[in-house]
Image (cartoon, rainbow, N blue to C red; front, top):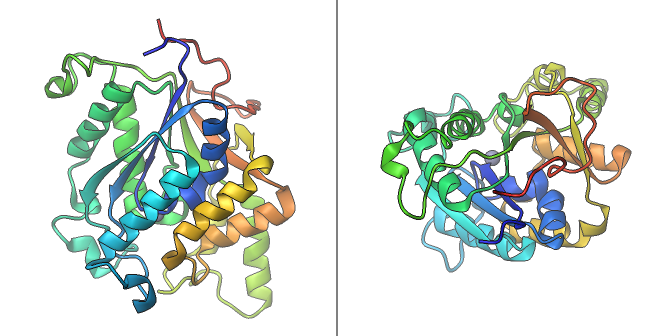
Length: 292
Ligand SMILES: [Zn+2]
């Protein structure tokens, strides 16, 4: 492995989070020669599955993973790791109680599997969800918690020794980012919905998304990654996830609004190295040193 090689690990919960969250960022770094790896912790069983998209598939999981591999190829991901947990569904749904779901899984066990991948891939940069899971999805929050634990543990020889092998030595990534978005546009959306007579505290298909609450969460933007040249790849990656394009999730709405108003940038909170609000990065690899 060359010492100048740059590697990024993206840790997500569902097939489509990588595309609707940060397709532009992935496309840009792949184009710049970075090897980008993805962990997708669940198979997205709770996602929409209109009959027209199920043709040729025996389960929702199989259909959604096929969509994920289409997006992975479009974006140029070096490898996708699937953890096979069950999609926990939205907060409060009966699927939260399924014993195989990510929400029910032990955080330490999930973190251990991420550590195993970090030690194999040796990414300088790791990206995951913010502590609120973007819009509060239980799987996003579980993924965030396990990734933070894994980031802190992968370089510690005493942590998860069962995941130390000849080709998986301890390794400490240099930077950790949380995906976020500019809340100003969400606040604008909340205002717009209220104006249209909708209740912004009860949005989404299941009326369980409180947009007013999400808009009030503070997730500082430390890094803005320009993705303008990659919109065609982003569009093709989105088309791969055709089964999920119906309806309007709060996050998708925020993405649409922010792209309308902000141009084409992906936004990140830098969690490590710890930064203050004056931090203004344009590149997630800023300051990254080559591996010794
Ligand atoms: Zn998701």
